[in-house]
Every structure is written in C-alpha cells, then in structure tokens.
Length: 269
Image (cartoon, rainbow, N blue to C red; front, side, top):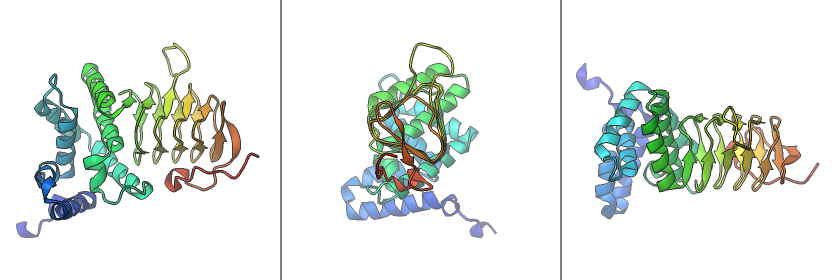
C-alpha cells in the first residue's frame, strides 16, 4: 500500500542521519536555520543536497548556480557511484577525524570533503568528453579550497583529506579506496614527459602532512608515508617510509594505517 512505502530518507541511513543532525543544529543555533534548511532540509535526498551544496560553492560570475546544479543533477542521475562514494567519504571522515562529530559537518563545512566531491563531478565531465567544463571545475576547486586535483586522475571512495590545504594530484595519478592524506600532500610528476607519470596509491594508505610522492611509482596497500617525506621509488605493501629521499623504516604498524591515522613509528630498522 502507498502509505507503507518507505521514503528515500528511510532507505538512506547516511541521509537520514544528516537530516536528524540538521534539525538538532537548528535547535542549538537558530541563526543558521536558513542555511541549514536551504542546504539540507529543503531537499528530498542526499543527491539533491550535494548537488545544491556544490552549485553554491562552485558558482562564480562566469558560471551560475543554476548551470552547475544542472550539471551535478545530470551527473548523479547518470552515475549513482558518485554519490555512493560521497557517502563513503562522509563515513570515513567521521570515523577517522576526531574533529568530526556529526555526518553533517563534512557536507556543510569541510573543504576536503567538498573538494573531493567537486573533483568527482569534474571527473565525470572528463569521462563524458566535456573537458573544458571539467577544467572549469578544477579551476574553481583550486581557487576556493586550495586543492588542485586534475579531473583525469582516478580516486576511489572512503577518502579523507584532513585540512585539505595545498593538495596536488596529477593527471595520471590513481588513488585507491580508504586512503587518508593530510595537508600539503603532492602526488606529482618528475619531468615534462606526457605519459603515465604520476603515482599509484594503493588501498588503505596513510600519507602524512607535506609528503611528496613523485613519478610513476606505486605505494603498496596499507603503507604509511611519514610527514615531510619525498618518495621517489616504489613502496612495498604494509611498510612505513620516511625521509628525503624516503626509505623503509619499518612495518606499517597496523593492518589499516589510513583508519588508525597513527603517524608515529618506533625507530629505524
């Protein structure tokens, strides 16, 4: 019967929780009620809310909110994996970032989350052959958030970029699932070659603040790159590397470094 049909909100636990937290936020601080209603409670689904939030953030005098909203709606209608990845990213941030206390926060306030979702939109445009629009999204993300991710790069889900200042991800870079990185990380090339020239980051990798991973090299799954390191050679799975240039200094320390976010190591082997 029609009255027993569950709503989208009930079928989507992430969205259900965001809406509940939005209502609690308004009770605690009525002055943000208009913003919370416009960004969250006015919408019937997570996809709609995310499309609206990105349109408001990425719009400029050159490109209106309406046009960006239409692009985002088309992308989410075409590829459900985009918003599935966004949900996974929210859960990842909540699980790993001690400063994140609600699912609401990444969607509303965290530029790392917003930058990654805007990249996903730009990547969809890139795959559609709409390269100039993809470059526009990249430009706006760089201007707004200080995060420069080429739209051709391939990034998995369950991604946390903490603080998200001065992040650079090159054109042929590949980032696996459940990766965590801190501010000022570069996944870059080493020269002017125009081919596969950027790093491949495995699943579950933790990359510390200021680390540079350069060239067409592989960082194996569940490894750790210490803060400030410069990685120029392949890193085996489940190892810790540190230094300039980086070298192996020990094991990863746990089975899922990106989940534990523990950047300490006990010494050099």
